[in-house]
Image (tube, rainbow, N blue to C red):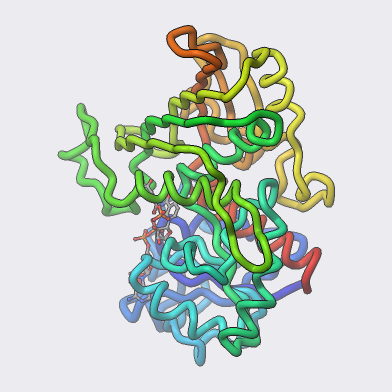
Length: 348
Ligand SMILES: NC(=O)C1=CN([C@@H]2O[C@H](COP(=O)(O)OP(=O)(O)OC[C@H]3O[C@@H](n4cnc5c(N)ncnc54)[C@H](OP(=O)(O)O)[C@@H]3O)[C@@H](O)[C@H]2O)C=CC1
Ligand SMILES: N[C@@H](CC(=O)OP(=O)(O)O)C(=O)O
């Protein structure tokens, strides 16, 4: 067992980490850190538990500590669910000694920090050696992408491996949990939709190409097609829905695209990692699926569901589909945990 901790343990994503780490066969959750507002209190007092599951008994009495490397004690891996501005300041300090598996956006685009989806670009973990050498750290930082980006990129990967993509348009319908517990006031979202999520479109457009890019002599060369995103907040609690429109360079058969998605597997499936879904992408044929309430929890929330896969007759060589991915599981805590499982398997 590897001792692990969670930074930002009282928040929306921190709670998902705790839920997913309960009974994990390789990780023992021993440390919970949050702000000075929470430090010194037992977790059950510090946290307002938002999830449908019960707060695990095993964490109720753990005393929350300050988010400082001197407070976290005997752990090897720290999962970070910190706000990005705090993460930028503290994650590098933790990485001097610990492995930081971060879900925050702060360090994702640093040239020597791997931004990884284990099924898509596990080879980016090679950057760790460079990062440690350059920064003189004994630990390191590994990041996972933005929640909307992860779901999109998992579905693009099998297409990208088999076809030449010219451009991708994506329009998202994102759950309120993506903004944190107090992120979107109920008066703003009930009976409504908000057509703006700060920084989200830029993240989807850059991170997707980075993830599908190539690592060449320690430098990531992004994939060379266009991604255009429009992001919207909708009154759904969990589960991001995305309408995806893809133009390919060449002709294609829809059944071949479907087959490529359905049979897609990556290193986590080959290695049998604990949190890896059997099928990262599941394709449904029902005309009214996927839907967030029904499909977000597929394979423990780790699989992305695709539906309405069809040709787009309005443009040459074009197809479209709708996807649903769980934003705080596959899009956040589950993504960091899968990264850590891969690191444990191939690096530790
Ligand atoms: N929600 C989602 O779907 C996704 C979120 N993310 C990212 O994950 C991160 C966490 O998001 P989320 O859980 O929604 O955020 P929340 O606001 O729900 O939680 C924030 C957490 O950070 C702690 N914190 C706040 N300020 C400080 C501080 N100054 N020092 C130490 N700890 C602090 C809080 O502790 P306290 O309770 O003590 O204030 C709390 O534990 C963010 O970077 C977010 O962008 C990424 C992908 C998806
Ligand atoms: N912005 C996302 C969640 C998030 O926090 O993303 P990021 O980790 O890229 O900041 C949402 O609102 O649904």
